[in-house]
Image (tube, rainbow over all chains, first blue to last red; front, top):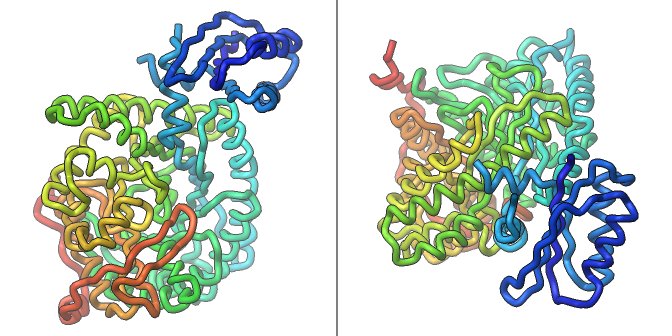
Length: 90
Length: 454
């Protein structure tokens, strides 16, 4: 399993999750968990995904999601999980 | 499993608080590059660097993208060139040829800076060491990204005052030869006492002779993150303050450790050390000075500054040291004046003097760093300041350094601009009382009594 964290930050609009999930499904990225909350008035969504079977390079997925985010006016980041686990888990 | 607040905290650090990995530095040994003549040696050096570091920049960029963490610089350090060129260089010009080879190789692989045009002369200079030192004005004015350092002293050997005296003149000459760019050449040179072998930061980085063939060292940063964390400590006692700094330093260092291990794995080069330094940039909110001010100092330089810095430096080490298996380099808080917004402001207002900076260097990781002084400062005064700083390092068994920029043609109150991360600085006064009879005595200051531990 290769886990990554996708975060979406911005104004809440219809179809954000749908757009991201459609992309992930098209490229065989499996969604393991989704949570969302409002922080400082902004919509925050976090997905934990497994990209072990993805048909695209991880770097390309990062760029694609960034472009999708730009298209709908939100910030979408996709980062490998270790940066978070290293920082927050001893 | 990770929760959304933790993920948010990390990304907040990166996006709002300027958390970054300051540098991935590949150390490369050039000891096997010595050929029969200067040209042959230059060719081997060029080939070795461009082979070893071929993928350094692209790997750094890929790690940046995969983890979403900026890696500001990719750099190279090499074996001190006075050792590499010792058997083939007969003149200073021969050493300058090697500087050009380093510059060309570094530009070819796309790194930001290459360090190691250096000499280790803490007891005394060899002929080659002296030739290299005398080549510095030419080498640093003719190349773009070559950095140089000279280790003039150590706790074990004392201070080589002949080298210190010579370097006063050399710094002045570098200043003159790069007068069109606010004496930028001096930004690329630092004099050390107790220089570490594995420093990933510039201008003082070199690949020590105790190191292996190649190594990856990583320098972390993050004064902005510490500063933001201290907002929660306003009005609280020292225990709370220290806990906050330690916890933050731990988190920052873990990111550095991850990046270092990943770079090491992808490049197939062993991981050396993490340097835990808090390295500021001239950007607002990325300042060690701001951290000191949040601790409670009205402006950097005010009474209490040294104590606050000592505490900050110690807590950064305590927090960071558990986050990585191998900590080395300089590891502490940097106080480069021109690279730190709040220190620039304090120097401009007159609150921060060179004497207070000297006191601060007794308790933090480096020394008098990126300080612009009047261009007509005497060479002996520069040597005197270097000797003072080296003495602090020698007696306290710590690394100290001097990177002064006598800005040619400018004087107190004017501003020097070095551009980019090197920042800008007001030219501050130095004590011009004559010390030439001291620095020209010749010979060396003996090793201190506490160096005899055997």
